[in-house]
Amino acid sequence: MCGIVGVVSNAPVNQLIYDALLLLQHRGQDAAGIVTQQEDKFFMHKAKGMVKDVFRTRNMRALPGNCGLGQVRYPTAGNAFSEEEAQPFYVNAPFGIVLVHNGNLTNAHALKAELSSVDHRHINTESDSEVLLNVLAHELEHTTRGQSLDVQAVFTAVRKVHRRVKGSYAVIALIAGQGVLAFRDPYGIRPLCIGSGPGTVVLASESVALEGTGHALERNIEPGEAVFIDLAGTVHAQQCADVPQLKPCIFEYVYLARPDSVMDGISVYQARVNLGEALARRVVSQVPPSQIDVVIPIPESSRPSAAQLAQLLGLPYREGFVKNRYVGRTFIMPGQAVRKKSVRQKLNAIASEFKGRNVLLVDDSIVRGTTSQEIVQMARDAGAAKVYLASAAPPVRYPNVYGIDMPTASELVAHNRSVEEVRAIIGCDALIYQDVDAMKKAIGVLNPRISGFDASCFDGVYVTGDVDAADIARLNAARVGGVEDEQDTSRLALPNPVS
Image (cartoon, rainbow, N blue to C red):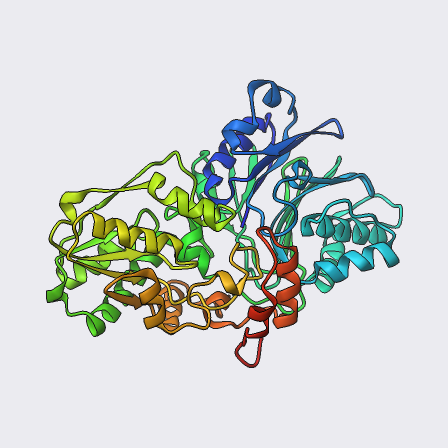
């Protein structure tokens, strides 16, 4: 999961890109980068850290020009500790291209070998984004054959990229002296939208980056679609996939995206309200509301779901945890030890809301279980009589291979465990999970155009149709945070068929 932005304007864009990245900071806290173009020359600054720490006044002054790209990075593949893994990535031929990428390529290993042996291109990092950049560069070079670039050549190159590349990818690329290119994988797994303001066209992962910088959301980039914005600001668009299908990642709505974003025609906030409504029905079937004194959300993504659940069940809704906003999101911190240590630094319980009460805690999802375990214990320490835990998402049982940092089966508390076994590990008095079909229905009803979702971490069905247990083991070996345990990989049973 990363956040990307691209801008073509009639005014300097460095501040605009910076502001947009701040609005996308929740999508990546490991590294940040900006590249701009002036008179066919690229100016770039990127480094590890948060946006506010990476860019100082001197760095911003060194980013002139009226078009550019930016990215906030959260690593799932490659070396998390290398400055070279930060984006944008650059290649000098053809034309000169810089690229930012949100997603994860499932065939990056094969592509890297192909680029070396057939295309004669060198990959200098472990990042699949550099692989993607070089595939795009090769196809642009092959399409133009040394001639000048035109819009149809760009779209032809993207069509060839779609046929070679597998996995999830939302891409924005700046081609020197030509313009900005954006495209999305044929399933639309990772989000990308376009908006505009006076003299400016903006592309971004989420609509909040447009609206928060004073630009109007126009639409989402369609799955498989390519959009090219020339330096005059003219927008050209064409469908470049053979069989596009809109199947976005459902975890974006459950957790990843900001609630004030609209993605593929769905309000993220409303999606979470709907999840709360569906979860309320699950709670009633397992714990009588008369046994619950208060509903308390685990900040922050679960608040809309918890509030709707409480209203439907006629229960008091209270804020029982105070969040330290200066600690990063524990979900995207590498390493279990760091995550566990940060929970109590991040949250503090309000004892008066727990003492002597049967509390229903509502979380957006339970992935590794480390945070849930700590929070349940915090509620008990604060005096709760009983602690029930409800998850607005179903059990996360399968690895994710499309750009979310939870691909290792051994890290998933629900993998190969029953709900009762998970409950015992977390230490709550009752554990209520959302139903998979109810989750899909609750969100899907908000946009009938969506043909389905990538819900692979919940149901084990990988929408690209090219992922099996061996692929997952290989991807895990290259991921940030460690290598998959061989014994655990051998026990990874994916639903049949994987499609």
